[in-house]
Length: 134
Image (cartoon, rainbow, N blue to C red):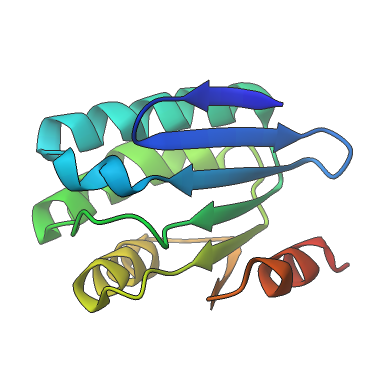
């Protein structure tokens, strides 16, 4: 079931596996800082309602490098409430664009007290297998 959708991002929730799939679109190239923050807060609100304990975040088409300032904002405004729902695993499908990929990894790795397990993949099926494994 789609729980949030815009031209930049789509979030699906799968009740049976209590997981979500977050897919960034190639239109992210048109985002600016303000749009990024708005999309992240919409992402957060939809996720807080659904409360998945596992998530795949598909950033392969994300074409928006996250600046160090936005990384800090994400770590302060996004991760703490997200972690309160009991997220245990996050699989990132990473972009082939190096700068974007690096900024995503830095954002996640810099999150303080990150209690969920994170892995990076370039294949959706491998990400699903890892995510749904007990």
